Amino acid sequence: MIQLQQLSFYRGERVILDKVDLTLQNKHKVGVAGKNGSGKTTLFKLILGELSPDMGELSLSNNLRIASVDQAMPDSTLTALEFVVSGDRALVELEHALTAAEAEEDFEKIVDIHGKLADIDGYTARARAGKLLSGLGFSNDDQSKPVNSFSGGWRMRLSLAKTLMSPAEVLLLDEPTNHLDMGAMIWLERWLQSFNGTLLVISHDREFLDNVVDHMVHVHHHKLTLYNGNYSSFESQWSEHMAYQEAAFQKQQAHIKHMMKYVDRFRYKSSKARQAQSRLKAIERLPVIDRVQQDSQFHFEFFPPSHGSNPLIRLTKAEIGYEDKQIFRHLNLQINLEQRIGLVGPNGAGKSTLIKAILGEMPLQYGERLVNGKTKIGYFAQNQLDHLTPANTALWHMQDLAPEASQQELRNYLGRFGFGNDLAMSAISTFSGGEKARLVLAMLIWQRPALLLLDEPTNHLDMDMRNALLLALQNFQGALVIVSHDRYLLRMTTNELWLVNGGDVEEFAGDIVDYQRWFMQNS
Image (cartoon, rainbow, N blue to C red; front, side, top):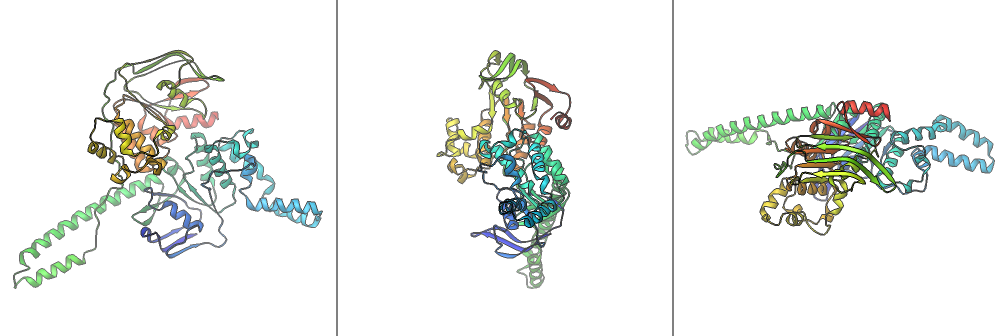
């Protein structure tokens, strides 16, 4: 059990958590929700003992083993398999002790260690580690490669696998799906569903939370509130709570206004002054009901496309690929103004390559690419975040994009994306990944595209910004082609799926749930 009693934590003079009470029972699977900077990661660090409360207490059950993913990029010459096995520290210590005992020919100790290895299921450790790696997308050959040979995203998968290997009663996972494709995410969901311990997970993927958790902790205004149910259930309960609070606020304000009319009318009349003063004191004794403040700071929408007529773009007999590898052969496709397409397919099938070919960033090896002459294409991909100038500001980037617009107009526009005056004038070098992604999206939307090509647009976005983007995309009047592992976003913004697989692209007969079934059957 994990229990917080009247716990407070400050960062300098800033209050993060204020006299919070929370009890998490064994084997609960708990999602943690709240705005960026509200204290979600602070809660994890307090539970891990990396931070200490300024007031109050945090108590854990005796001998509770807690595992969490190291947020630092792993740097190791161990093979992927041995790196994951090292997540079981007791096993590693016993294996080292066994090596020493064998060198000393201490047969009594050797027998004792073998017994301890059997007790912790040590002889199946590498088979279990291999299953973890396979589930997260590593091939058999990958498992024998050194950790340092993998890219950053794959190394973070290794860190996740190492954590899952740990024999812990409590798992703390902070954005575990950030570097996963859909297949690995589905596998992780199933693994966590069968995990026989307590789980706390921070995630901005609502579908993942819905499939994994049975409770939610909401971090809001320095308080922690525990809700029964998954994320969708929490969202419904929270909306009801907000509606009730707003109604209570309005009722109280009407009551105060009525009483103040009496006070203002009679406070200076000697015969009524005592009653007026009594009502004034009654107003002062009323419990404070705060007006509901909307959490979301994002209020934007796509402008109507400046130009666009069908077909927006057409590829004919297109061959697409690289010098040493051809991805697509004899590809024919057409995109019209009203289409809303989600690209799905196994990792490495060529979804991002296809988007680059549609954009024209990747020249065709053969075939023809025709674009309606007036069609504006808006493109978002993660590498565009690196194209922002670190020394310049968000306002500078918008002024560079739209020199004809006034500074006030651009400031107002940036404000819809959460860039207040200070943030709009801050250097990009100080921005988080989410802030950079918001700026790139703001710049894209300003250009009034008729065709949107979005490659993993939600990777760095919190739940509020994801919801704002979803609403904006639903009302977008142009064509949309999107690659995303956010299944909720795909479900709510697209009306057809194109399957990218085996060097071909074809319309998929079904929705995202059907695709998940297809993927699990064919992976």
